[in-house]
Image (cartoon, rainbow, N blue to C red; front, side):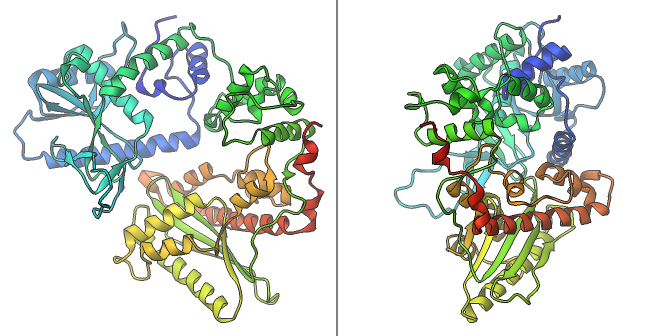
Amino acid sequence: MSPAVLGARNLSGCEHRLALDFTERGDASASDVSPEARRRIEAAQSHRAAVIATLHGLQSGQPTGTVVTVDDGPHRERVEQTRRAVESGATWIFRATLPTDTERGRRGHAEVLVRHDGGYLPIVIVNHRVTTPVSPARPADAPPPTLLTSPLWGWSPEIDAFRSLRSQRRDVLRLTHLTAMLDDLGWSANSGGPTGGPERWGGLIGLDADCIVAVPLAAAMAGYVGVFERRRAVVDGQVRTGPRRVAECRSCHWWPRCEAELTQRRDVSLVVGGSQSLILQDAGIGTVDELATHRGDPPAEWPGAVSFADAVVSARCWVDGIGLARRADRPSVQRADVEVDVDMESYSERGAYMWGTLLTDTTNPDREVRYRAFVTWDPLPTLDEGRSFAEFWTWLSAERDAAHAAGKTFAAYCYSQQAENRWLRGSADRFHGRVSGVPSRAEVDAFIGSSEWVDVFEAVGRNFVCPRGKGLKRIAPVAGFNWRDDEASGEASMEWYAAAVALDGAAQDLSQRARLLTYNEDDVRATKVLREWISSDAVLDLPRSLDLLPS
């Protein structure tokens, strides 16, 4: 077998997946791609192409040879074009492809190489946000801003008091990987490694594509060496790996194989988090059965923020086939006279295109329990998103005010408010003052902070031990609810949305709009069914968690 050659994407994520990709496929980059992952890849490619076109346009007045865009074609030809551009001293090199280093085992490409200080800095373009807006009005005791950003037209980083960094490890790893390759080629600014200057830099352009974030790399470069050497050892078979359930498993094509192996050996990672399973295994608790019958204190390294008793109960539920265990004699969730279930649909970082609602007046059985969706079918990002959000907010506020005027209590419910809160605030930040009816950030924050905004996800965690997770599609079936579409999921809805609006050149399929509305309606109805079940006597059929602990 030929020596392993790693790209930046091989430096993070599950080591066992990397080992399987290489040993089973013969190439560390040969991992299968799910339709959902392919959609994300295609969206990222489209975003990168659009940003590169913008950057190229900003340099349109430069002399010939200053700006070079590497053409499509065989890898060898792209490498040669990149080499000639570097040797000619081009200021901007777009779609640069670096020579594969078979001796060190590295491959890489950069959306942009920009000439600086006698060499080149890598700039990568990603399809997620890399900064967060901050208010320039800083408290007197706040630390000074440290983020450096540069305009898109040139590498000229300066302190930016209006943004903070949203750093992701994989982005920094890619920049360090590319910088290491540039160092080895002698093409790097301050080439020769970290001793070439007090700081190393790379650039990052995110979804908003409104600046280049200057990312300091000196510390990351020092850590990169160990990361790369371990990953090479994994694919070379020098480090043994095995399956362990982690968050990445949800989208991994190897999961059916790993799940079967984990289930056969009844591995403890099936019921606890990945890092917790390692702590248990180090303490000699390797199976679900061993955890389910464990008596005594948790292992010394067990994290204090995680209930060890819940882990034991989860294991017992898994062994006995129990869906949920109630913590209290009588579970409870906040109820009201007028109840509105809310579910938001968004597409990646681009925005929220739908706000679905289901209103129930518990004091008036004659009032229809009606699903209502506020939606835009203009491809995101779009100003029309502000219009649909304004209509949702206006309707919700009117129902809330009407309930108060009638002397009735009111509550709006969602399942896991993190996503809804993000787009409530984000919509206010982006559209207040631009679109009529969009509330201010202060109005949104007041609503989020009120007792009338209820997170049913939090109520589930407060009331139950959930051995198979707390996702709505895991919990609602226990309460008797099932989705009409067997393929319904957040990931699948991304595919449906891309087709519904012909996003990024996708073939349009208007039937996917109806599918998305059905999916959203089922989500709000699932939330209603779940919270009403929590308040009913039927929930008392569940065992108490205390009764499941070993005596």
